[in-house]
Length: 422
Image 1 (cartoon, rainbow, N blue to C red):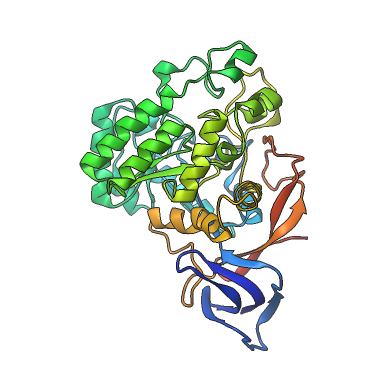
Image 2: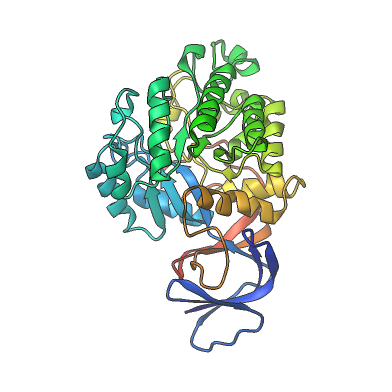
């Protein structure tokens, strides 16, 4: 039993806020009241701390199987717990890909050995080749919580429409990496000031806009729950907004902390440490993403945690892989960039980082209520800190050395303390 005393509880799902005690037993929240007395419970003094639902990240890469020199399920889960995440959904661009029951089961079984909830998507197409749809019914029955070929855009309209029809029948989301390669000369760097700086062709905004428009149109027609992943352009944000305003609430989008914090200027400053797909864009795009998060157009913040080795990131700009780690800095960037600057309330930030993601994937997560899951985090929202070391195997991020506000003090998953600040 755990008894969290005198914390400021925020439940973004119900809107309930206030100073309460929280009693946890048997993986559930038993009571949320003031002045709970329970002598046998382990007591945690949360005076001055926010008590919030464990965060949910619907877009992470733990690189297992196939690329465990970058990250693995154990180290990725440790990074997640440190960052306040109690549930994560893995992407399926592993080697071998998650296009069969054997690989899916291997990942889920390994996930059960960690201290948090590790779920995974399966691929949309066999080998991520965009030609043949996987056996979605079998994979869902085996535990896949959604489908994506993240990292590779699906170019066949026929495949996309059929996949949407199947995921609608199965009542699971399908997530899309919206970058049409016909527009892109060099991925990871925005076509504009940044590409000019490096003397390369870069990746233009049209690559994202075109496929986003296509897939939103199909989603309107078919009714499938779709997720526009790591949205990066103001035009794509507006496409999502228009769809949702027109009543198509099956159209969803996620934004990353790096896309609401940085612009292509960071690529010039940090080089490969700020190279990612889709690339960092312009200031108007960054502000449009923040506006989308504020008005609910974008319901989810997802890290796209993408570990790479130091050696890989030290390659020339056109040869280094795209992506940065994000689990351990995500909440702090949200507080620093969105809450402290007045764009979102703390409850809204927690909604985008827990309740919204959990809702899309039908997870029993993202809320604080009696009878609900004992997946909680304790946050010192005013703590100042500088990220220097990571639980992840990787350190490929431009945010090392930044002054951030907001720190996870404890992470509780299934009623157990799985991370505690030293």
